[in-house]
Image (cartoon, rainbow, N blue to C red):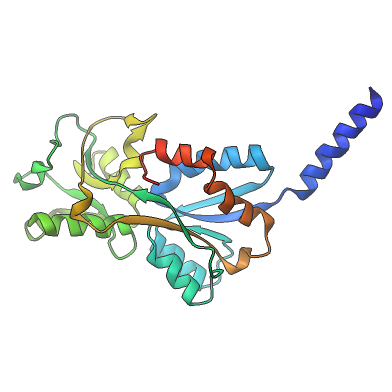
Amino acid sequence: MRRLLASLITLALAGAAHAGEVSVAVAANFTAPMQKIAAVFEHDTGHKAVLSFGSTGRFYAQVKSGAPFQVLLAADEATPARLEQEGLAVAGSRFTYATGKLVLWSATPGLVDDKGEVLRRPGSGRIAIADPRLAPYGAAAVETMQKLGVFTALQRRLVQGDSIAQAWQFVSTGNAPLGFVALSQVMEDGRMASGSAWLVPESLHAPIRQDAVLLVTGKDNAAATALLAYLRGSRAQAIIRGQGYGL
């Protein structure tokens, strides 16, 4: 028994010795699923993912300035591609880990109809969006309003957050009665958590393909490459799908 116990301890210590840590910049819309994925990733592999959440545009600027992130989970496909072109990401490591879905959401039940006609009603208050210069979901929101022919009329009512997380916060706290947010932010256990929402048809905006990429600072980090592989696995993909994303 003592020999068996000693062997088990040796194996555990060996596993711990090989466990690593990876610094991950994560698009704000992907906060909830990535927190869940990081927990099961650590459980399954022993590697720890240290997560930072924010807008893709700000992460791009930080990586350009030398921030020590090792993996980027962007809210678009253009930013990881640009980092590859600029030599700041490992060529060939980029892939789409999720496809985002945009919703017009209100914390008030019944305020948002199932066709988004509330956008055409006068006097329905401010509308929160993420900064379209920094956040792909904000750009998709602007494109949606332009295609609906309501952007000019609504422009003065828009309030911008730095990220989609801040846009959601404006609506959830009542500072804006309406907002364009990520479907994943208002879903819980595969259903709408609260309020009312209109799922924006994908024909009204460019696809929100969210790409992951290995940054050059992480090319020799086993935990970084393990995380990217884990995102392609069935356990992570089940979480992603359950949070309202396409694959």
